[in-house]
Length: 401
Image (cartoon, rainbow, N blue to C red):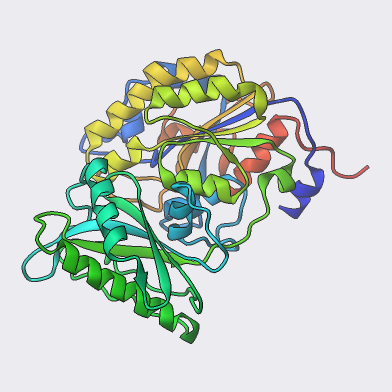
């Protein structure tokens, strides 16, 4: 990427990167993925005049989390720039975090009488209940030892906890075992510098369990992604962009802030996100537009629901995006979330790139995983996608004489 940064120049062309979260899938019993099974006349028509391909978020066979997968899309090597999920969540809810803050993503969860998890997401409780519970935790746990505790609600069962004070380090394990039927794990340290952090995190978990023990569903909390904030060079510095983020979920807004994007007020619906894009179109030359619901459906194993969300994007959203006539339009996912696996997977992700300078395929009838195998973009790492977007927007000067 040093080469690309040295070639980056300003231009008037505008780039729109649309991320349909968890877009990639696997065939169900009808031998089609969610994207292939969907009725997508607009996407399929666009595919005939676009370049198609597949991208791999991290490496072959490696299942990515949402954070590193998005970092790769933005042109950051996810192995060189590892960011704790808690940092992204804290930034996403609007906290002004400090370099010494230990940030964690937290979930309300449900345990049975034997202490094992029966639902890691507490039945996906309503955001309003999450806000109520977070307010109680904040009131009852303002400090642990000499550490200030900051609790902020997210969306649904998710919330953020930040530990602020002296002597905290990162390098901690998660308490979330990632599967129901298991006991929450203690937070453990990977280095002596994190001893105080582990002690404070486990004390927080235990105190939360005391306060929530009478609840039927959200009766415990899980912590993951505990980390101190890193310092990353911004997209403005690296690629001479004026970038903006339009997303409804805190984590993606936090990730965008971390790489120097302006985070725009986007409301809570796909159509409010579109309205934000239209409103701010003159101000920026790079937009990251994020849609979450496909990933949620995939994680819940709801093949038909994920398919329906893709169809809604095709019918209600894509025509309005095309009407804006942006110079470069890229539609892809951060990773694959096949409903048949009910979670993220290592499978490559379909990508569509449209501009005045692409080489379309000879014969294309649809935008889908198998069609993208034969696309003119080939199969490439996600981290290389950004330089293609810049090139198609005429934002890279010639290399050499």
